[in-house]
Length: 163
Length: 296
Image 1 (tube, each protein chain N blue to C red):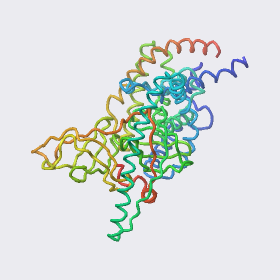
Image 2: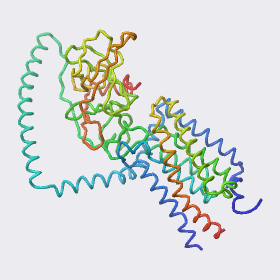
Image 3: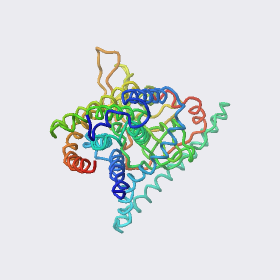
């Protein structure tokens, strides 16, 4: 048990580090507006799997790291992550009982909300962003979730067994 | 209600319910955003954070650099010889031009003396910087260079390459700096039309091949193919550097200004080296008013 517990932070840490790397890795110009919100998807995944360990404070800190990494306003991604993590925590009990397709719908809505928060803050700061660059990530994020949710199902079963 | 999900609705630690915690943290974020946007107090914090994420940026950049390096290492000998030959030719031509420039400079200095104008023509200090292969989506016209405050980079510092103006530094941390291409929608550069000397502005559009000149009247003497150079107004860019070529000039009788676009002379993409230019006079101005005038 202790070996498993001591290793249980490793996967989340690795996936979130991977998500941070993928968030800024160069993509060819055509594809780059469709870069999924890797960090948001990874964090949503871990929030839905282990809601006790991935709370608001971690979302905030991760968001600030993402802000520093992408050169956005400090607090911009932090606020967006905070909002979707809070909502996914509130929805968590219900989401557990939902079929995968509904979970995916909720995740897509959360990702859209995430982009909306970023958009509003960009508007406040007067930074212009093309519209496709805002909503492309929601589409690809949803597709990414479909792949992730297979893993989520397995992880959830594992977590339930553990608890 | 019991079971694995119970904790989700309750505070993990502390006495605050999750709703209150959320609101507190959200307000904290909002304060952070406003302070970061309105004031400059957070530059130290940002600098530290940039240092913290520097390893990630290097990790992202590394494979691309390594790939390039590997490409260089195994490049064909003939290829290298050919490139060497080309570079030698270019050097000869460049030195020849430089010779005539030196005599022109001396002549200029003599004329200035005659006119009692003591404005000095100082040599610009320059430094090569590399653009890190790091994408800042969704801001495609922002990028990171591998020079920072330890190299005395300052906010508002112009970036050029062999062809002309590329952009300017937006924020500086100790090892890296963030910069804008001149085609960023938030960027505006004061330019002059080389042929006529008329001064105007060129705004970024977000498209790396298009600049827009919003304030040229319908009667302006502008033709496609005209070269735009920096006018030196605004005190950020050195004057007389090539910026763009006029691409389109469409008169719009129903409006005050004509529709004018230009194509930047430099390749504005990320896999290249750029030149940081220090102009002591301009550096002082830029210090006094960060990014004065050129950031809308």
